[in-house]
Length: 115
Length: 110
Image (cartoon, rainbow over all chains, first blue to last red; front, top):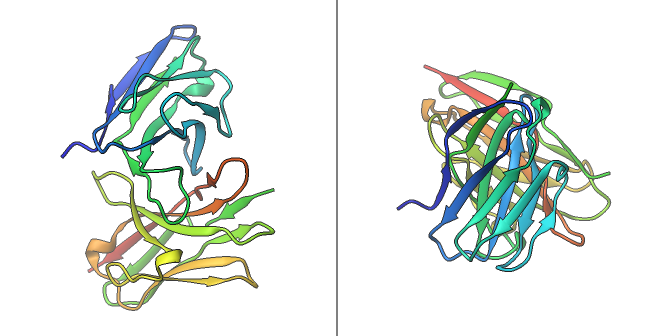
């Protein structure tokens, strides 16, 4: 019962390198989200996809791009990594955009360090 | 601005003691309100939602619109309640934004 699967779990990058964080869900959910969590702070929304074929910016989108590849997969790309992007990244999904009590289901997170 | 505050980073209690994890939000409207929990080595997951008026694992959450608070309570804490707890109001707008608080770590000691 995988739910939301994120890869990789850990990654170390050098400043300026690029990488893509992968996320897939097997619950047939329409909406998917990318968050980052920094020490002492709550999760902050980077980008979201309300439904297949749409993506929109969240609170902290600068330095990131996303692709909703299909209904299952939602990837997050760092084109030129910066130390300020060192964080733990969480992917989540929900049946519909979160409202009316719809819960979000989370992955295990990706711990990303940028040197 | 929409904001959510969990004033305690750490709440340490003994087993059987009452627990109250505080959450305050700033918003002119009436948000939907959620509490999420992350147990050790587990994923972040929904604990309860105000709209359901439910009690999960003995926890309840009272909405106080006057004080704009949504505190999480349990009358008798258990060791298995030890976890990180996040308050998450949902603010409506162009996108219904789920804003997470910084979290409170609850440690229940035997």
